[in-house]
Image (cartoon, rainbow, N blue to C red; front, side, top):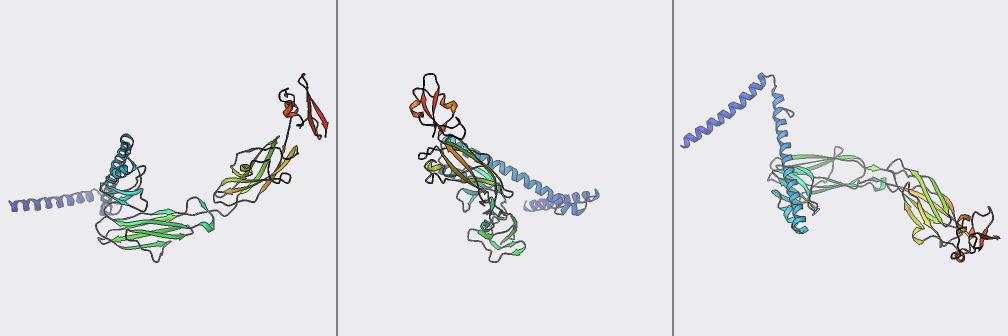
Length: 376
């Protein structure tokens, strides 16, 4: 029985070899070269790549379904965040935590995915769980930077899933070796002080001969050109003042305008609410401030000084505009004075009664008319 089983195995092995040889011969007879069969872009390799993509897609689908179920359980069953974390930890064959406790690597059907456990959701596909995996996170290059602030770091982990240990690691910057590059006991590494655009290449091999290489392009957006304030427009509606500005920045773009209010007449700025004396506003926005009378003056002139800040925090030179707040009413408003409101309006300046002269409300009669007190 044993010999029969061995003969059957030998026969099956011979049959399989013969089948493979037959397929190759048929392909050659059909005009398909061996390089087209076995090369990197050959038929067998493409089939293997297709199978890998299919397997990866199925694993992602499975993981997304499991994460969705966990999230649904949280809302339907009232799982606590701790219970939700335990639930997600049970997904897949293994969970390997990184430096961020909320980010994990889940292995499903032999494929590794990075998972945000707080949402939960898949953040990224890491790779197949049969060799060396290199992860990388680039920080410090978010948005636009000034040259002196450009300092990018790359952090990550190099781990193996083949059952061996990481034996060699190396890193290059634009083709030049980075001296002293190494990994910690948990596989973590860091590359710091990157100040210009560059390409980092990290390579690693484990004790089972599995290897991997990861290319990390780093782009740093530098903006050292200040923005420009093109114009400042200010106007007053009696004690209410309004102002806006236009400007531009050809690099990182305008972030906002900054304003400061000063006055040679109202040096303590009593007429301006304290929280409105400085501030920011955006392109297209009009700042509106209701002032109050200052001293015995009927009008107070304020200077609005505006600068612009871009998205790299460069600041422009300033532009100014003057605006005069007037403590008074118009002729039309004076005509609306009633017996009940005459007291609060006696003595108010009528700002458009006679141009170039200061006239005040003096009396009100039952005809609905008012009388100015004359020039002061």
